Image 1 (cartoon, rainbow, N blue to C red):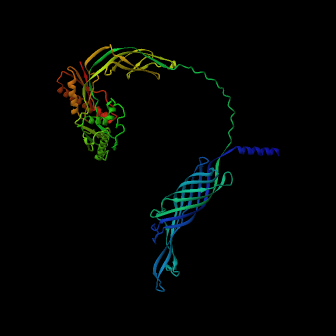
Image 2: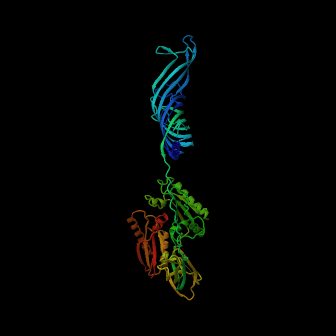
Image 3: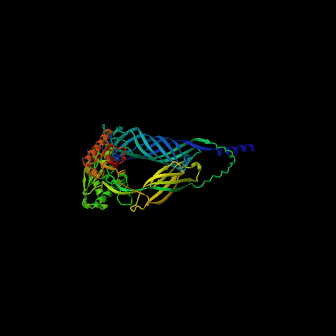
Length: 638
């Protein structure tokens, strides 16, 4: 007895220790389907139309087989295939006026018309199963949602009519007196090949064993498609079923506990080597040089007097400046375009007789169908912005056209981008003061700078150092030593001292010295005209080689200022639209036209050099491409 008790206890312990995991559920269901029908089925073939049939009901059996695949204890997928009888009957009461052959009186004949279809479907339903109470294997309460697809397998019908009153009324069919007659019967001629719907079910498990359960279920079926193709016939069903479900899975023995890991031996890390904070010692050992004064030939940067817009938009892009925020206008002409409206507003403010014409345009009605209406909205947007900047509304005129007066090539995407613009034409005021001779004073210095890098990890010691004097960087090949740097430092108006700011940086360490160098006692030198920093940029219209009136003004001013014996370097350029051969030829034509006009107005002994410009503005923006349609003019004095 003791041995038997021990065996039973061991067996119970083993069963308890094992874990069962369900992998598949198999089920069979059977029940009844209560069907309600609605629509207008009196016209479906081959039904005899004896009045409107709009509603009906019926009762039929349903059976199905199903599989369930659990993803976890809280959700799973299912699939069922089954046979559902969705039959029913439509009825209506008809009345007829007729004469009683016995009494000769007019009477009303009342009949009951019944349309009794028999429609059975093989239906498929993939479902999502969610346990509300319990698990997938033991659902005390669960719901499932499923689409349903049905294929018709039975589609017959019978249409009959029965006398209701008067009681003595009869039909005579083939010589036989009867109170009920069959009007039509047979197969429905236009059943839908497929019906589509959705089901929602609620169910509960009654466990017969750990793996077997009875499953009562109630389902609601909504069929979305008509049961016939030639009439409206909708159906809704409620199924009450009882199912038998078998769980299939595997039993997993508990894992054998691994032996405890060996004790971890913790070694004390070595103390890291500590280095002094890296630093740079910076000092100025010697300052020498001379003060150079004189006149300097300068040209103002070019201005692209247009506002460019995004496709199909009349909103001025946010990149354009609309107010004075203390920022300085960039010296780069491409970046300076952001200030174009502020520059126009200042020009009009300085010239009371100035007038402004805003010419709105688009890239054509193919890419921007709104055409001139969009162009007008763009011009109005620029007008409102200029008025907000203080330009009087009375001096502004707007125009609109589908394409600009001077249009870029609309066959290219970049050309269409350039045509989406508002050109700003300023009358009675110069857009630029092209060429002028200005006084300048610079300290042409030679500064000996001593640098020493100390501290930090020797393995990470930088091999070089960057030294900046008044923003001009120089790289010194060694972090330690003395270097002589040559820098031109502009002098203030009083010319008493040259401000110097020296910054040394290496390995993430920065040191700065700010000082002022007295110019008293330094050698003084004056030059008549300095031209080494002179560069004038003449803009051309798209695909044009002729000089504009503004360009001619610049060249006349230049001819007056440049000394006899100078060399005029003329460099032609073009944008990227079109072929390389055409652009190269256009650059040469622009340079030749500029040289010819300069020769006609100079009246001096000048040497001319024409070539293609190597340095270009970025072609990534419309203003950059506008600026690349240019001639650069430089001056080399004897």
